[in-house]
Length: 443
Ligand code: GDP
Image (tube, rainbow, N blue to C red; front, side, top):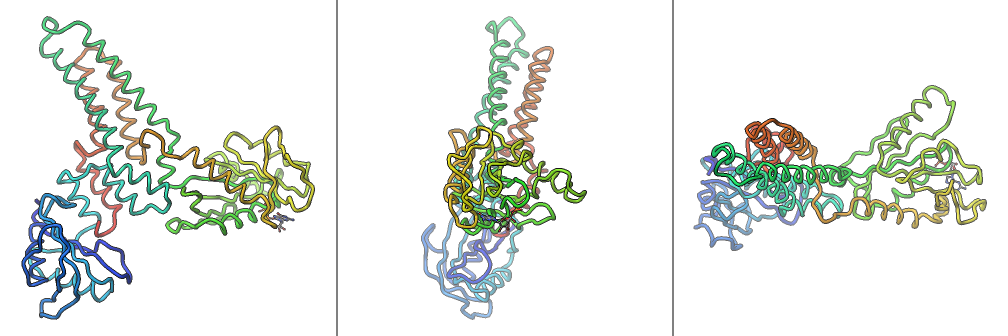
């Protein structure tokens, strides 16, 4: 157990019905008795208690919970104080705790870090916990929960376990030379390494599904000036819930709005109109709009129904498999379904009357769901994982090309370390600060 006992509110700031204050470490029982003037309650049972300040004044009446080590979130002795969620109440309790000898306020993510250090969760689960707390859409929540329950960690651990067995085999070859070993061990090892590296490569080629779901799926609205791009963005933004954590960005040429579309976080960018031979400033905007369209996961190509059946050739050129095409201003009566753009089915919509908007949003939802829906295998969710897996694959490839079993074993060892770094099984001391800094106090 860590020597120090830490405390912090586990619930958010501001007024609320309840607030939870967590204490973890060897002095947790002492602190609890000190604040309540009573014995620690029965383990894991909510028990009514008065919380009293140093001078004897009652701060609040609430519940105390006692989780003796190791069956607690952190693996240490933990006390949880459930009090009324007012500033003066929480402030009073924190002050009383600060007066207890051996207690200090917790740092960012320190509870979770202790849980990791006591083997309560691996690093992927700790990261998932942060994601779960930050999740703003149902899709993000599902992904974080699956990862927190250990799916991703189990996958990486299983790969590492397989690799460690292979290494053990190889080491046997080195130690016992040829005479005692069955034939073909090296071949078998090679086969397994090839298979593993194929599996990891497949996992890496997931179109950044998990990372996108975590950070936001990018949808770019493209089309000629005056087609109604901004009008459509406004209509969508009015209908779908805004995501608060992402500040909308506005530059001269791109306006961004983050929305919850059918449970998925979608960052919609309204790009400057695509037009040839525009002024320099506008040209730059157009260039960026094109880049946006290329980078986006989905493009919503908007054509101007006022000039139908003429279609903007620059926009047509950007229509591809990730495009949802719409022709706006259907209210002008120039469109006759089915609307087709170069063999591509388009939806007739009107930002003015709302016609076809439901269908357009439903199409976006389906498209997003099809691409980002959680499938059988858990998705990779962080650049940190991706980098380690790429290191692992590199080492496996070097191992396959290496001359002799000794060198091969060395590369495979490096590969297994790379996998171990993801879950925190090996030398991760230097990255822990970075990971847990992303947490808020009280986690
Ligand atoms: P953007 O340049 O593509 O962003 O286009 P805007 O959204 O600024 O719209 C250009 C013009 O078309 C504005 O005058 C809008 O009022 C008008 N407009 C947008 N959507 C519709 C629509 O569905 N029907 C009609 N009749 N006019 C529209």
